[in-house]
Amino acid sequence: MTTTRTRVAIIGAGPSGLLLGALLHKADIDHVIIERQSPDYVLGRIRAGILEQVTVDLLHEAGVGQGVESGGTVHHSIELVFKNTRHPIDVTGLTKGKVVTAYGQTEVTRDLMAQRSQLNLPTVYEAADVQLHDFDGHQPSVSYTKDGVNHRLHCDFIAGCDGFHGVARASVPKDAITEYEKVYPFAWLGVLADVPPVSSHAIVYANSERGFALCSMRSMTRSRYYVQCPSSDKVEDWSDQRFWDEVRRRLDPELADRMQTGPSIEKSMAPLRSFVAEPMRFGRLFLAGDAAHIVPPTGAKGLNLAASDVKYLSSALIEHYKEKSDAGIDHYSQRALARIWRAERFSWWLTTLMHQFPESGAFGQRMQEAELDYLVRSQALSTSLAENYVGLPLDFG
Ligand code: RFL
Ligand code: PHB
Image (cartoon, rainbow, N blue to C red; front, top):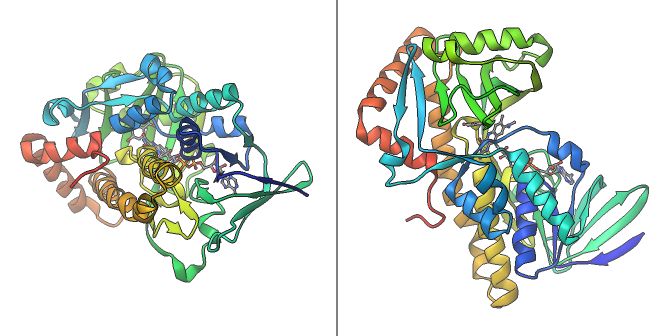
C-alpha cells in the first residue's frame, strides 16, 4: 500500500474533473485526478457539441482556449423545423449580441488532457475500486487499486466529478441526499460521419410526426446527427442507410435534399433523463457536473452546467486557500443549484416541445405545432428560447 497527500482529490477525468484540475493548477493548488478508464476510452465517448460563451471563457481562463478559438464555429442562430418547414431563430439579435460555439466535448477533453500532460500534472488512469473515506470528518481520503497495488490518497477535499454512474454520489448516505428524476420514454441515436454539415451556421432542431431529429457538426467536414428512437432499440437495429433515411424524413424538403450522407464513424444510443441531486456538498465532498445532475441533451446544457459548477467550485476552493474564507464553500451548493434548476427547466421544456411522446398522440402533436407556430412569431417566446440557449450569466439575479 502506498500513501500520498494532496489538497484536492478529483474523482473523474471527464470535462468537469479536467477543467477543475486546470483552474486549481492556475491558482497553484495541488490536486490529483483519479479516473477509472483509460485516456482513449474517455476520448472515445462522443457527446456534447455546443458551448455557451461562459464555457468558452472558462476554457480561456484555464489556459486551453486556443483549440476552441481556432477550431470552433460561432453560431448566431438556430433553425427550428416543424410541419416540414424551417424557421430561423435569430439568437444573437434576440440576446443583444450573444452567441454559442460549436466545438466538440471530445476536443475540449483532448485540449485539457494535452495541457495536463504538458504540465506533468498528476492523473491516475485505470484506477480500480475507487473508494471515498471520511469526507464527513476532517481527514478525508480516497483509496484505489492500480496495477494490483493498493493506494491511499489523503486530502483536504474530494471533488466528485465522476459522472452519473460514479462512486461519489453513491457514497453519500441515502438520508443525506434528495434525488429528483424524470426518465423520458425514448432515446437518441447519434451518428458521427465525415461529411460536411447540412447547416454550418446553425444547429437544426426538427419536430416531426415521426419524432425528433437534430443536425449538428464538429467541423466543416465532420457532422453529428441524432434521431429520437424507442428506448428499447439497439444500435444494431439501425444500419447507416436506415438512419440517414429517417433523418431525411424528419427534415424540411430543402434540407433533406441538401444533406450529404456517408459511412458512420461512431454510432451510439443515449437515454434521456432529467435528474438533480440536492445538496451538492457533504462535509468535505463536493459533487460537480453529471455526478450531481443530468439534463436531456436537447437544450445542449449538460457540459455547460458542468463548466459553471466547476467555476463556482474552483472559486470557492481558491477563496478557502488564498483568502482563508469558507463563504464560497458554504454557498457552493445553493449557488450551483440555482443555475442548474433553470437549465433543467429549459431542457425539459425544449424536450417536451420537440419529441413525440407515445401517450399524447395526435392531440399532443397539434399542441406542439401550435406552440411552435406561436414561438416563431412571438418576440417574447423567441427571446425566452434564445436567452436560455446562449446560457444564463454565472451570477444571475
Ligand atoms: P462525464 O463526462 O461522465 O465524466 C465522468 C468521468 O468520471 C469517470 N468515472 C470514474 N472515475 C473514477 N472512479 C469511478 N468510480 C468513476 N466512475 C466514473 C468516468 O469514466 C468519466 O471519465 O461527466 P462530467 O465530467 O461531469 O461531464 C458532463 C458531460 O459529459 C455531459 O453533461 C454532456 O456530455 C451532456 N451533453 C451535452 N452537453 C452540452 O453542454 N452541450 C451539448 O451539446 C450536449 N450534447 C450531451 C450531448 C450528452 C449526450 N449523451 C451521450 C448523454 C449529447 C449527448 C448525446
Ligand atoms: C451535438 O452536437 O452533439 C449536440 C448539439 C446540440 C444539442 C445536443 C447535441 O442540443
